[in-house]
Length: 211
Image 1 (cartoon, rainbow, N blue to C red):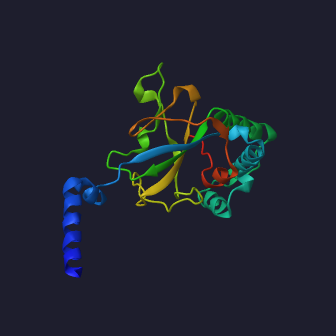
Image 2: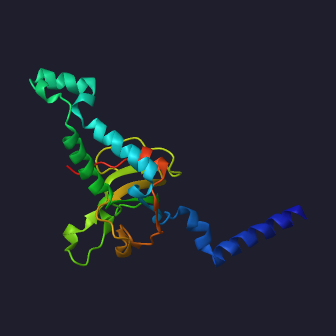
Image 3: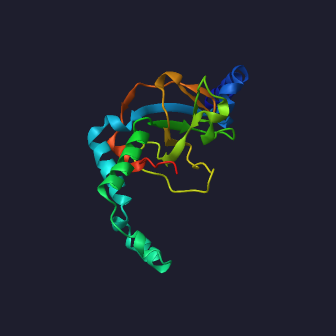
């Protein structure tokens, strides 16, 4: 009786595979790539973090606050005179320039899954009907994060993607216009409403001005 049951079970298994062979082979197929926008954030909408960041950035650009290593280098190359406090007007100019940039950027946070060989950071662009594609605003100052968005992934060579199957990317788009949408490596992306930039991303993906 036991032997007959084993034979019957074997025949049923073969029959099931013949009816639906794709189910048995699905595990061998590569997963399709996915790109999902987790959030679109306005830096200036988070007043507390915004003011703290601007204050830190302006102070850091005042030569008297340079790191000791930087001051020592300037001294070695005969540029000691540059290690002097900036005037209030000069500091105000730095602040105004930084705030002008921050007022028109958005930080976009993306969850990426199983990226293929066609995936590229440069593919994230905001369409502009009034400009040629070569002048569309593209991802700037990107940071690769863990899948839960809690940490920055280790640095890698330029153009190299993380080896993880899932990870996040946070990047800025200048001159952001929510109504224009955002293109990704696999086509247009669905955008959530703009929210204030969370404290987590002020720490993990701070803004850097374009030189």
